[in-house]
Length: 350
Image 1 (tube, one colour):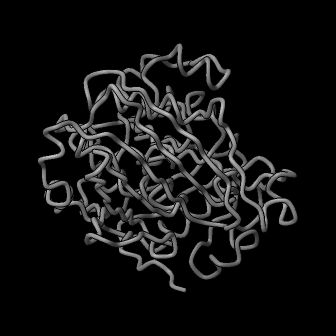
Image 2: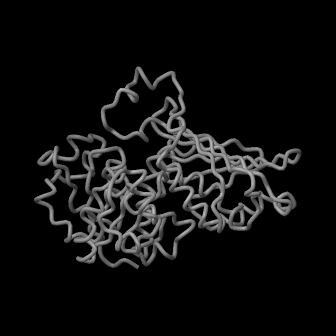
């Protein structure tokens, strides 16, 4: 068990995932928040930008050039793509653990990464040893990792929704897997953008990234890991008029063996020891409000005997289990803590 507090640094703490990390880490009993960097806000008390943290976070934003991140035990990158890999070499050399909430260490195929993110990958040697940080699939690898690529929000719902079936070979992969996914506006980040203005996003719903979304190759790579082949996968994300929340509805064709399997029991058994995955009783309809603010993922299963299809509905808070909460969960595992530490937050209702 951890005998001293973990010194934590956060790079890029002015966005929604950054403040979510602060919210969770500020009440984590084994963490000491050491430094949080921002070029634009250097010198500003964190609680002045985020009044919700008054009395909980006393840090002041530090200019990156003035911050010695090598004094930390772990550094979280809540930054745009490309930032973590530009600093990872020095941190890894100093023995610091790195958890990147962007995409720098999610995709092992560098060609695919550079195609989708339009950036050259600057540290392929570190990428080769990075672990995809989905604890329910890669817990033991996370435990010994120095660099974690925290999964994207959409991939978390899709992969945990499909994993029990793919692990057992119960999906007919001659038929495309379909995921119809929806996210609240906070998934777009804290930047000023016309599409996320209140007057644009409220009372409106729209698909986006239909011709190609950057989470598609990430999901595809992990589906290949789970199934051993490259399955056909159709993914359509949507923007919905809410701040937090994500819902993915997936449709798969079951194999003959899958049709004979008690799918509910399969999922309950697979996730019975997973503290943050909740398999709901038959007939349940997951709602995003049941996970708001918590690190929980809830799912329900709807077999369609007449067609041989299975509908899987998954919900999570895109900023918690879809981002910052999952990052803290990974940190707990890396430092040999109970992975629930600091994350047993009851979701907010109503």
